[in-house]
Length: 195
Figure 1 (cartoon, rainbow, N blue to C red):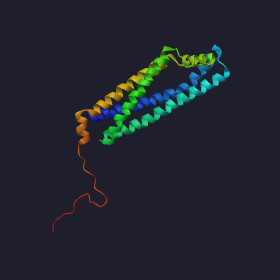
Figure 2: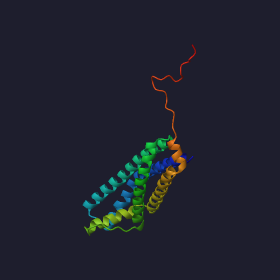
Figure 3: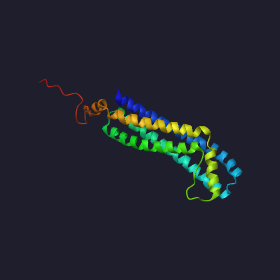
Figure 4: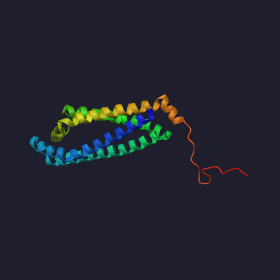
């Protein structure tokens, strides 16, 4: 039961990653449209406008791609864990550790986006600073909250999965011996010994 719950949590985390990927892809055009209007209103240099748009597209596409790949990995691990594969169990612990770290970065990013204020490192060009602020202001208000909740859910899911797979019931499940299927030269039923 413990292993089944852990596999189900992994499958839910995979679904959450797919939803995040869809949201990132869906946000590209609407955020860019709002950004273009805001950038013109605050006087962003047209050359900077193109660079910021390209950076936004690259960031959202990369995030969506990473989310899809994470979903595939999580589904594969869920299947392996559910089947009692010891390697899948170990890889799941590694993925859970990495997932917690990345989700914490997501929480930090959502908090920064939710605050509405950005700081461009190095003091830089005022046009770029205005452009980045216009970009942050172009995200819908619910975006930061949804991203933050998603990241918190991921942290909790990864921790729960790691703990479930470390419980004694999981140890017993993964240490059980399994009968090997008959090989190509081994008959499935032993021959009769009657003479």
